[in-house]
Image (cartoon, rainbow, N blue to C red; front, side):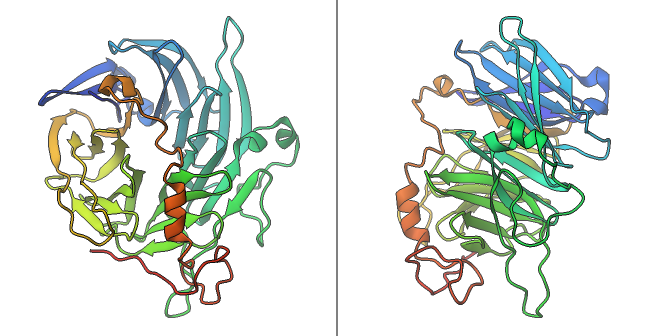
Amino acid sequence: MPRFLIGDELGNIKSLRCSGDNLELKTIHDGSHTGKGKCIQALSAASTSSGATLLAAAHADGYISASILQDDDHLEPLDQWKETRFNPDQRYVGLSVSERGIYSCTSNGASRMTTLGVNDAPISHKLASLPARLCDWRISSDQETFACGGDEVELSVWNTEQVFSPLKEQSAEIETSKRKRGDALFPGELWRAKNVPNDNLGLRQPVHITSLTYLWPSSSHYHLLTGTELGDVRRYDTRVRRPVADWKGIGKIGGVKKVEKGFAEHEVFVSDKGCNLLALDLRNGAVLCGYKGLSGAVTSIASSPTFVASAALDRFARVHSTSVLPQQAGQQVEKKGEVLDKVYTKSIPTIVIWDGDAANIGLNIDNADDGETDNEDDNVWETMQNVGDSDGEDAPQGAKRSVKKGRVE
């Protein structure tokens, strides 16, 4: 059965296991004595060659801790460090553990790559500066690139090696107070999205990305998904700059809170700042199902091959089943996802992740973003012109000129 890891506002880390018909919640790190300054803002886990799990946690006081998590939920601390550029009014927007190191990013653009010492070697850090006012940051499955976006910060994709290279550190840092004028890219920046066209009154539409995720990579381009403060969900193909699909009003209350790619092909999960958690079909933006019984906004979503977990402001962690997607877009959904069980966490959970251990659920799973469906996916999106372009200026080579808009049920 999968194991999910939950961080909360008091600094606790808990293990949530799906065992039979019951949920087992266990505290593996007690941070309640430290107060809300240790609130966990981000978690990331990855399996090591020894079979254990390397776990990193980013706290509200600017510290990041690294630990080894055993299969029996025993947590062994390794090291911790503080982001020196972290201010009290900022937060961590991204954290990722990989074999290369531990990557972190804050809302003011302070990015760091940390390599843990091996065989008494000292811990090492590489620093970089990204644009400020970020709301979300994600690294690709192969760690070759990462994406970020935020309040008046358009979605952009960066080369990880170039950003953290010594040459980059010696060059002039990015001005975090304002973006460069024009379309010039920053050092290490590979691609930047273009804002959607003006509205019917000719007014510029504000840029406010609240959440983003990678969909499928390929050798030459990426597919990404974003949620906005206005409640829109947009899909991007990095071969063009404007979104290839723009689904309006998905986040009905307060805009989109989180977007998360599911393990099933064409499946994505979206929550808003109300009590709505939805499953969408990526082929047309249709709502596959809405999960019932939520009494608080879902702040985090974690997808595994068998279940989906969510953490909400009502202090419950829930485990959900997934919908069975129709063979063709637009067909009726035969089986909708539902809430299978929930457990009271006592304190407000802030983040939930899957530990990434496929062996615990008896599956042999390659990376979910391995691009196996990339060719099929390209066939769908290459027939679409990016949203708002009537002249096909930014359309992929061979794309049709007709605009195919997303449909919301």
